[in-house]
Length: 179
Image (cartoon, rainbow, N blue to C red; front, side, top):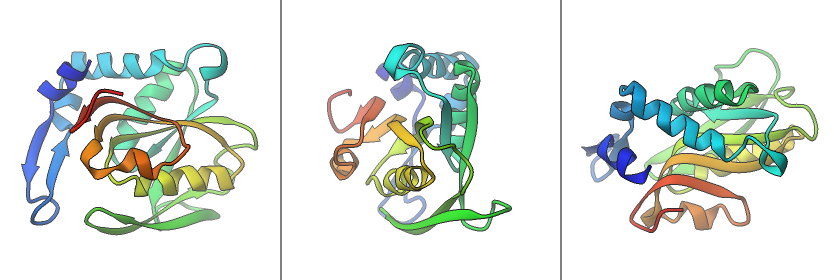
């Protein structure tokens, strides 16, 4: 799976700012067969027993694409974790630092019910700021977040270490061994 993903990643230098090499997954998303394989591989971890989840939460924007497909594959609902100001109704927010700036994300206060087992999904784990903020927001809403799952992990940015005791799974690791 790691080789398939690596073959469908595109490096975009100096995006979104000078010095950053952005790992673009759009070539993977554009290949229906490859994208389907990735979604099935992610789903296989959460279909039975204690790994089963009640809902998938995806972080805007590419986490929406992956998360919605994964929720469909698992037969569960989907919760969007959005940029501030994009959700109607009462929300819970968190502001955090990125490797190239800062951002605020939010979820509806009633996005999950207390005790729901939630799988958090994003495309890339970099420094961990987005993932930690999303995880904590869902927890504040009563969720039992079981794992962060990503397609790509940028190990050289130490996001997994920043996640602490939170469970992390990545299909392809750049700058380290596959997880």
